[in-house]
Length: 575
Image: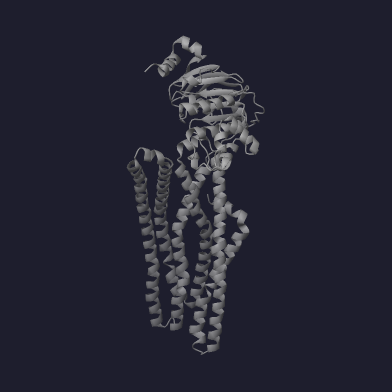
């Protein structure tokens, strides 16, 4: 883990080196005051060298001014090193998230992912700056101060240094408990963010059902978990700091007693004793800094572990030797497909499903909810991988396992019931179907989706901001934006997953007209609960409990008198 962390310094090694050099100079300049104090007490003052006293004071002041400039550089540029590293990690993490399979997002809440992207990486950046700086400067200061104190009185110095192993032992013992406690606090913070993200996203539902109290209860569960985790972490931190601070306080007691005895016996004079008391802080201060640094180390190290946990999750990978699918005609075939979302494969969502959709035809999938219709829609673009014994899905006779995912997905357009629009303008959301599209192409796609007249009537037209997830648009308007987006993409294969089920009748007519136009010349797979919308499909498959139980045209299925006829008559029976 340490090697992986150090690797992020390499692009900024020059700035990092300058930061370390400046920190080292600051430490060395810190030695000036006690050394000068020793000269004043033992030379200048006894010899009444007043001129030397003034010169020494001016020199110290000048060096302190230099130290002020160095501290500015360290605080500014040193933190920028951490910021650059944080930005690089965030960039890599975002790029990695974009390449993770759908199954990852099924198991991880958005708020928890955002915590790792923000809070954890901030703690890492703080460690990136202060970690090497503290380790370098404190180590140097401890070594130099130890050597300098030995020149004053070696035995008194060794007595002080003898307490350091005790301090190290206590620190190591308590550090593990503090590390575990901080890890739990991270997890609880992620739970709060996940609950907060869910509640804010669903605020309109909460208000509609007047369930603010319920959301408060759910939030308090995570909030209380955070309080409990903080209590454990602060308890561990309190024990750590109080114990280590007590030991450093003992240093002063030892200096007081041992130094007094040495002075009493004449082993040390008053000037040396006074200098030792002033100079011993050069030794104690870096020791205390290292102790305090342990908390920051725990925060940063815990954050980096959580960062690499996600970075080590395998990305979606094309199969070895996978090729670009090329120009797609649109023939789709499922051969003996079985699939389970669960890793152990105990419960198959699909069992031995075989279907063939000829080029340019429309097939409808109907049946009870939870039967596996949407799963089929997710498998065709290879959003979820089929197992080795899960059968195969072919596009124009090519197994989708053997073609690149990007080329496969470029040839497939999807319109779902739950439309997702990005915060931005109508133009930007339509252009998502083809990022290099011209304004004319965007407008043409909007016209085909029965959207242009609505947009033209807006004050800002296509530059109208639609808000988060398109909240400023109605359901039908959002749906038409998504259809325009697919028109612009111009795929050979089209998947319509409950595209009109949540719309009123008038809006459905407009949407259906747009969808009919969209389907022309494309291989289309339609998932629908409203059977009136699929009567004219070239073929209809009834999916029940993961199996194809009936197959045929509308008239053929009605003649069979099976599940399809029951579903159809159930929808159109007289009240």
